[in-house]
Image 1 (tube, helix red, strand yellow):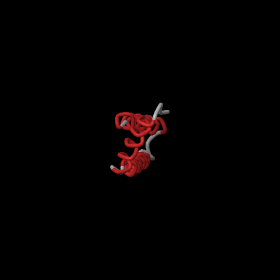
Image 2: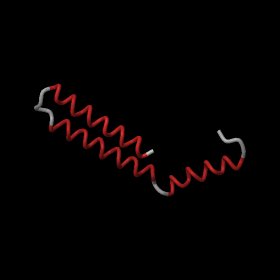
Image 3: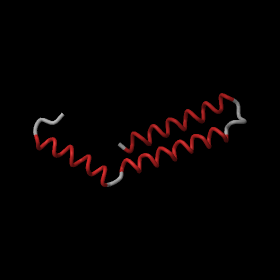
Length: 72
């Protein structure tokens, strides 16, 4: 919500910078790797008790959430 044309120009410049730097593609690659890590962890824990699986997957989820927040 910009108040004038200058504010709009700042926002547009910022977003264009993201597009030029391919930040969207980088984020998609990071998310794909995170999903693959979760799948691999789930498979590695598949023979463990349900409580162990939940503990590790919960910790993995928290780590991914913190990684996302830190990247903002």
